[in-house]
Length: 213
Image (cartoon, rainbow, N blue to C red; front, side, top):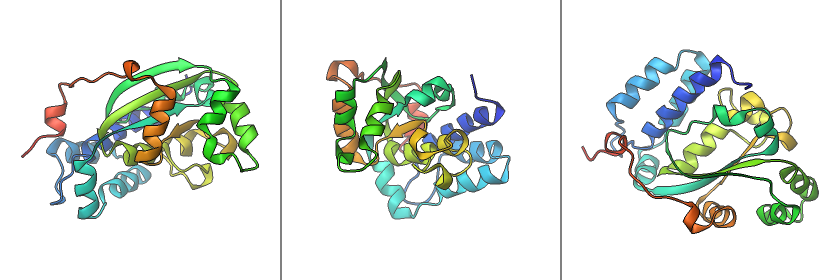
């Protein structure tokens, strides 16, 4: 696959993001998360990236620590061909996954909010051009932190260390899609997955991530 050592490092950062979702209003974070962030962020870019994630105002930290939610993330055809799935590690819980080749009609439903944009047809053609890895992730603050890991839609605005920042070149081939809010996440999950295709379970790590102390 295309991933090299920097993406193994990125996976470590992803786990730190998962821990960051458990930050409380006091501004404290789980001990293992703070240690992990310090030990894994070896480069200047990585340090600034982790610092940015953990520098949310206390009010925002409280909101995201309190919200258990699900988000939809898809590796697009170009990402599948380039092995981007090897680079995705959110540090959250995977509750649904499948590989599909969307039809043009299905792609139009996915991009329905872009129907009036000049690039609508091209985006639909691209999404239906090959296999897509569709996923649902669950966790506290998963929508916001998932978007942080993915990076900005425009690669030129994506930070180094994000999936788009390191793999994408042009906007039209930006590797991956992630829901941008709770309403969008709900709609996209319902479009891509049937209820019986999603699972609910408890991981052994949850008590260490979402502890009450």
